[in-house]
Image 1 (cartoon, rainbow, N blue to C red):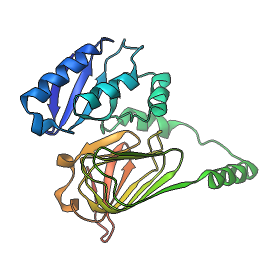
Image 2 (cartoon, helix red, strand yellow):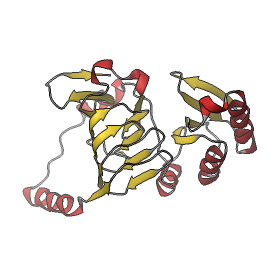
Image 3 (cartoon, rainbow, N blue to C red):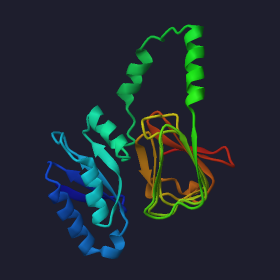
Length: 245
């Protein structure tokens, strides 16, 4: 098991086997070194190949017990493990590296012919399934809000140390100072909309960035975060400026 810093504010813990006592020991050592600095600090757990029987709920409990907040898991996870993460309301995070080979493969595939009748049926199904979860007031540090199979609307601020997750879009009518994860089940069309963008972490369909990696011209501004070609894209709500990050 190794422990390292990422972008100076996010810890990445690499779990190389299924002995979770090592995870607790490493986090405890880090917390003792700088208890004030690491209090409620976000942590990403990277899972190595061959750890198929991990207890994800126990991982979350250990991280919380040591005074950290689990931002999500990344690494070599099977589809069944990713489904388990969704059940436990834990985000699966991917890097924002552009997948050129994947794009070429998709472009070379022939277009699928779909009849007008099928298109109408799918459109009706999608419209009927769209839901919205509305939270009135501030989401405080340590709180986690999850909108399953729906959009999420926050009529207030999201404090540092708080986490809001949605399978669809996230709308924040206030300041985003915590973590926002839209498209949690892989919806790459999801977006994060907020009046004041100052997040600890923002993620679309598992592709994430920390605050230090965001363009400064969008910080503390009304912004939209979306995903295009495996890259997070920022759009100012008041201007037409768009920047890929």
